[in-house]
Image (cartoon, rainbow, N blue to C red):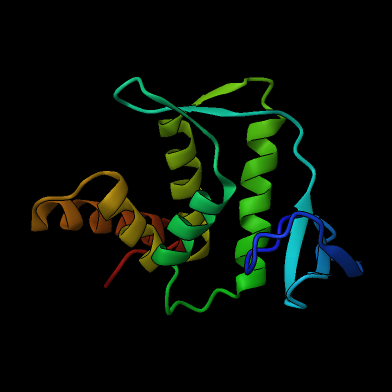
Length: 160
């Protein structure tokens, strides 16, 4: 592993342990050249995934990009980082075990929307506003109205 501070190519592992959800190995490393310490995470990758964007372009699946986009939607919401890690791991495993090596970006977007709808309605609306490219207040009203219907169904009785 290359040192992120000085670029030395051969760093030493000082400590290894599994993450709390056992989805990765956390390694503390030290560079013998500059003595800097840093942490890396090692995860199992079942297959190489390629994302097919709506314009037809392709790019490698980036788990960190998925994590960042969801964490932006969940910013200042009552969802712990560990819970977000678990969610991203679940989505990644679903994609890897789908049997497909090329995944449409729309599939991932819908997976994220479905997940956020279940865990935090505000994060769901935030993500939807970017994912669906909202331009007007009416776009927000429609999706919030749709959520309102789900909330009414979940309560079993309508509003008074």
